[in-house]
Length: 615
Image (cartoon, rainbow, N blue to C red; front, top):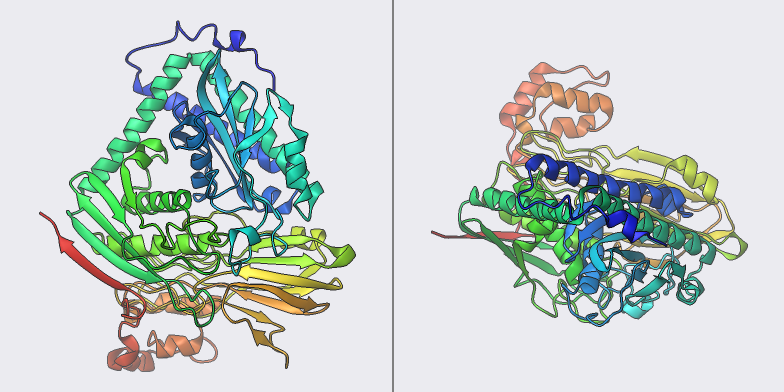
């Protein structure tokens, strides 16, 4: 990449100002977001793999000269951790790369969770410094989930790996482009360690292009407004986010709010791992302490620091004030502690491929803690897992098809939960059936909502998805990671739990097999076999007997609630034609006892809560 810095920066001194007006701050802030979005569009359109171009499993962002996030496109929250980790090291905000040589036209690459700032190996980050004359004024970064980077299973993302070395190629933070020239030796290392080198080559070049576009557009902003003005506007945006967080925190009563949630067992017999979150509110200050959280996991659900930070930032922003800009001013104001050697601060080479399942549980624990202070703002439990699946072909039919299956969102204090959506720290789309079947020797036999999977309540939990995929080729290998397969999402305020997820091979046949747990690899599928993927349904909010009868009737007509569940749980009785039996409904609702009890209070075996009041 060749940049004419004299042309781009010749007017910036004249445009500098000590007091920048708020309109200019807004204009430049929106321009920065536009740059990040444009880079994301370039990344998707130029990519080869369906996982990036169709499912949008990628993110783009801009950082200031000091490595603080100033603009992130609306992509995937967990990706912020990897980009911030890599830029933090290059900018000197984080230790480890203080002596690295950085020049105009460079692009850096990494995926390493322990050394390069990443969160798991399939997510490859690229970062380009942005120079005005001889000074770095910002960073253009992007990240994309690659379909395969080696490891013990195709897809490099199984939940049952027991070491980072089983999960694929580790890329330290190194240059992949030097002063505009691609370093082919670095690319060769990545391509040689992927089962799909041509696909990797196209995706990596797309990331390089996206980094270059982001850098070029940021330079154009500096040329238009001047470096001093852009820097002042960026600082104002960071300051605004910090002040807005302080105002939101000040509205929460002082105290320490603690909650515990649990992951499914690592493997059958290993025991569940608790996630303990203590949210401390002191005036305008907030911190989150995970002391009490359980051991490092044997399998790949450990969470490194960069992923934990991204998760906590998301949870606090969502609960306290969704309008807070997601930038470094907000992030720097939050203090986070996680004891070393736990699942939320593992030691290398602890495996991390399925870290997102634990990140989702972190959100659940933080939400449960804040619900004690903000009961009218926190939803019931969502499906809160990734339900990642991977199919790979055999022999000449080799392919790698990764997918993340959506589930139910928790019911809210004022509304039903959404059906079949991604929640919390992930935001990728599903792969459309037309794209799936045209790219791979697979057929989707069914793709539907699951009746009665949403927890009952005055407001119903969102429904789970069921996706049946048939093998058309000579055979395939299946791997996956998912949680909430033994402990379902919880309801709130008298709402019922949702339903757990599961993987079923050859459903409805004499050879039907439900896989033990959600972390599996090497499951052999023959031609004609069907794999049924069912995600969890979400928890309900409020007593089901408080749900208006007309809403229950609509749920029955839409297939969201069965007639049997309507009668036994909601106390709404209808005949086979769907006509309401008013007399029986009145009796059922009047005499309901045990079926109307709160089955979704945080049970001692699944969650506990406590509050220590402050001043």
